[in-house]
Amino acid sequence: LYRAKSEGRNLYRFFEPGMDAAVQARRALEVDLETALPRQEFDLDFQPIMNIASGEIIGAEALMRWHSPARGKVVPDDFIPVAEETGLIVPLGEWALRKACATAASWPPGLRIAVNVSAVQLKSSGFARAVISALAFSGVPAGQLELEITETVLMDESKAVLKTLRQLRELGIRIALDDFGTGYSSLGYLRRFPVDKIKIDRSFIRDMGNRDTAAIVRSIIGLGTELGIVVTAEGVETERQLDMLRDNGCVEAQGYLIGVPSKAADIQRLLKARAPRSQTG
Ligand code: C2E
Ligand code: CA
Ligand code: CA
Image 1 (tube, helix red, strand yellow):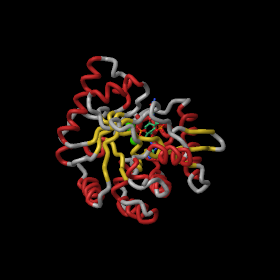
Image 2 (spheres, protein in one colour; image 1 turned 60 degrees about the vertical axis):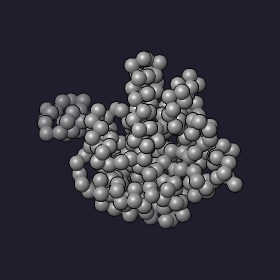
Image 3 (cartoon, rainbow, N blue to C red; image 1 turned 30 degrees about the horizontal axis):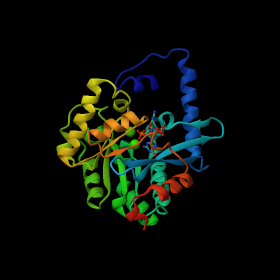
Image 4 (tube, protein in one colour; image 1 turned 90 degrees about the horizontal axis):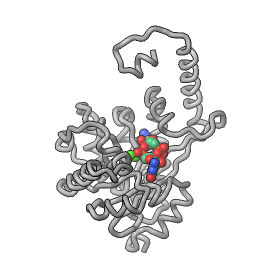
């Protein structure tokens, strides 16, 4: 069943020996994940985001971490897809929203908190309510919360998802398009749903030494400028990449050069030291 699903739906695969072990391993992962939330095995790290022109840190992105007693550190790419398939991403994502907002409540005023949101969460009926509740509970103003969604969410024709996003945006919550450039080349959805931010996928930044890739990066920055959308470059690791981005008018940068994902206490220290002056008072 899993083999058929992972190779695209509506097809069948014959059972082969060896699949049994894979199915059992997958089932064990699902069971561990299910118990991880009540056992408080999840945590959030925060990665700083910098305004390139001023060098100031304008906020941070929350990144989920799973410390499994049995498996050790499990990376999000290994457990988020499983949580999406089992539906656990709904309560897990809600936990992340609450935790991220609660953390950001003690940051200097005006700093943004970015939270990743899966398409499965957006399709679940209580999503808007969960977001509003996380804001109310923490006291973080709506304008400081940024929800990171992927292109596939906007490609989806589902009216309900667009309605939810509009509703949240009307409250002042900002919507960012994550991993921009990796999904589909159709940009029609940008007309149907205006976003506040585009995050250029780190695969483009990594290959910016290549002339064609550099041209694509420049075009995305130009697109953002024309549409009045903030452009953030992800995965910035070298001064050279940062210089190229600055020269081309990219607004924000995120990546190991600016700061690695860090514990809440460490990020709070960094934010206090490098947040815009007017906002630290
Ligand atoms: P993402 O949203 O694109 O997050 C950025 C990823 O790039 C993070 O990986 C981060 O650690 C990594 N990164 C940051 N700077 C650099 C750099 O300079 N170089 C390189 N090579 N990598 C860098 P991470 O933390 O493993 O997260 C992977 C993905 O898991 C995220 O990609 C996001 O799609 C997903 N994810 C993480 N937390 C959550 C969450 O709370 N909810 C949901 N739905 N998804 C999440
Ligand atoms: Ca993200
Ligand atoms: Ca990304």
